Length: 242
Image 1 (cartoon, rainbow, N blue to C red):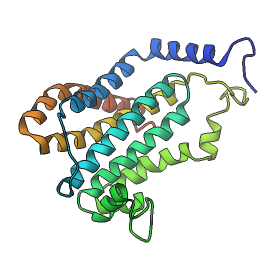
Image 2 (cartoon, helix red, strand yellow):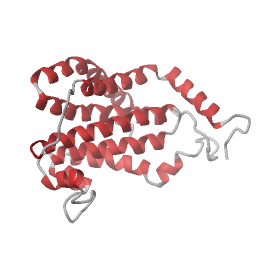
Image 3 (cartoon, rainbow, N blue to C red):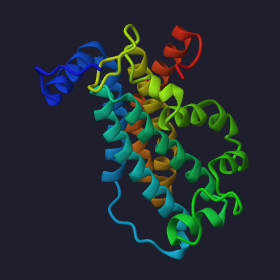
Image 4 (cartoon, rainbow, N blue to C red):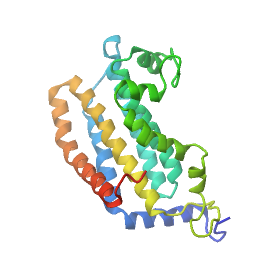
């Protein structure tokens, strides 16, 4: 089992974080710039009062806020080599994205997340993420992306294999930098971050044309650059890193 007894865990995490930053400044800058679009959006919301007439908008705001927190924490984890844990958090953003799409036209989903009338997932009530993806035309995301995120999140051969040193086979008790796993987390982060901006935009558009246009001015370029990075990554590897 690999654990340097001469260094504290905090020291080892610091080393991984500094090495990651030295190797991936552009990727980290992209993540920060896209996450900043959420902060800009939140700052445009002067006030918002939940009523029966704005249930969908309330759900969007809550889920976007939750996703932002998950992505911010995942950013810290992926810098320090906790790639599986970062993926677990980013997987919840994919789930929030499914719910955002589904609650637009499915009252049961609204009742589940705002009034605790149903639980998610609930197959009998049609509230599994697969059923949401199927209803909203996002089944390809479920099969191609969410399924793989779940393999990394659950105790599978894949997720447990990530704990082993690829050369020696020894278990790593302390974090270690891995380029492919870091890029995988970046890909997942930026994909989800861009996806959830759709609901920030939808929410702000319900407030006023002025507010959503102001947000679009600041969000457009960071999201464009992130999308270009994702396309370049896919071209480099011939397919998604997942």
